[in-house]
Length: 460
Image (cartoon, rainbow, N blue to C red):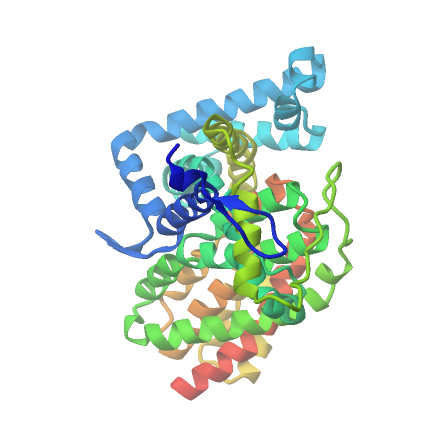
């Protein structure tokens, strides 16, 4: 090691760190920011490097990904059944395998159901509603491949954001904003940033890891996952293009930010999120958020905490191992759940009048707000619970630009949809139930709809 690297950097009243410790913070964190947060121009529009690389892997593996994911789901079910029924020592004695495979009977059943749906869809036998173009096939050929490659890269690369001080730095900078306004620790701001430029699934994965490591309470984790794991800018562009409203993109995105900000302020203060316990994840000690001392600045305090965190990473192999475990967690724990829940939700939306009936109460509300074609738009207010893209699909035939604009904005600000986010949330260890998700979806709709409608009346 060079004499420069050995030089100790002295700071009054603080521990001393080497130049190497500073580089441990700066280099991985900058690489993480570059991969997860810096927008780039891709072939299909604005994206981020992780998403771009995921698309390249998708293109490389092509049509083999559905078969690979079905095989992974099958391994998940077989491993879970062995763990739950036979309880072998090599699984129960391994903290990682025990957590991955020794799950409750409910989750074993959900993994089994998702795998059965995936096999039926892949080989197109049995009930056609399960494998039809707009149900199981939509998931296994469109969504699951994206999740497969995103999970691969995000899982391997998440330690760059989590383990080298970046969260500590952001937390110190934004603690005075996040805590009083959103009742959250400052570090949660990074979840939102990663979601905004990347994808909501990345935000959920970040939140899950932070919760499991004791940085969030149950209430904080639930709030962050359902409020700050926002839709990526890439997906909002897809929605607005599909509804043929590209000329209103600036108005559209401003409206999303305004409505989302109001929902983020209100939701943590009302049930069900306000009633979540301020306790740590089971078996984990809660890491208290340290207040910034009066004698220093947020930047200095955050930088010091970041260096302290980064200096604890002395093994590249340990970081790689954690990344691989992240990938297996998401592949085996989440993919079958997304397939199970997403297929059920899409079958209900496609082959039953359930969402049309559920949307009926919104007709007089939309009419009261003087929104054109209220009857046609009503079901789009609830069908988004099945899949975020469904409101745009259903609403694309509506003639009124104002109504299509409102549908585009509301579908994005609702956030919770079962074909992806809902499945991810329920498949994770985050403290949210299906009842919570239904309530959160409806509450977010009722909070954001009046704001969106008011802005739409000003624009149109």
